[in-house]
Amino acid sequence: MNAEEIIKRPLIMTEKGQNLREDQNKFLFEVDRSASKRQIRDAVEELFDVSVESVNTLIVRGRMRRMGRGYAKTRNWNKAIVQVADGETIEFFEEA
Image (cartoon, rainbow, N blue to C red; front, side, top):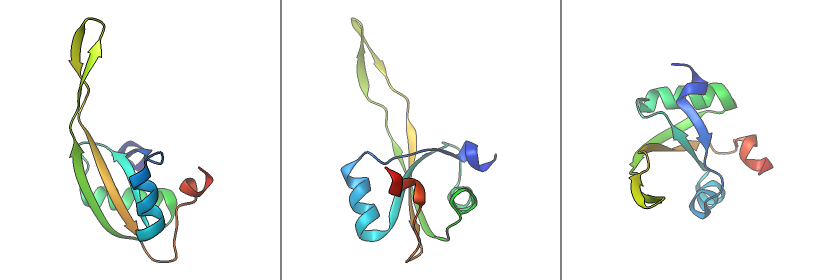
């Protein structure tokens, strides 16, 4: 699995993500369900050219949503909280 398949998208529109970025130098990503913490670390270092200090992951459970007259469950997905070294930043988040 290459780095583009592991990191699906950054999570930049949440208030929690913005606070983590400003206060603790942590960044949020949606990642592949089968990716390990080591693979996530290597992918972020390769894509954004930063040194990663720690990676925390969690599973976000899907919700029941209305689909017409019935209900359907949205998919489960993995969130990764990546802390980069002090003084480094990811330019992708600075543009938003």
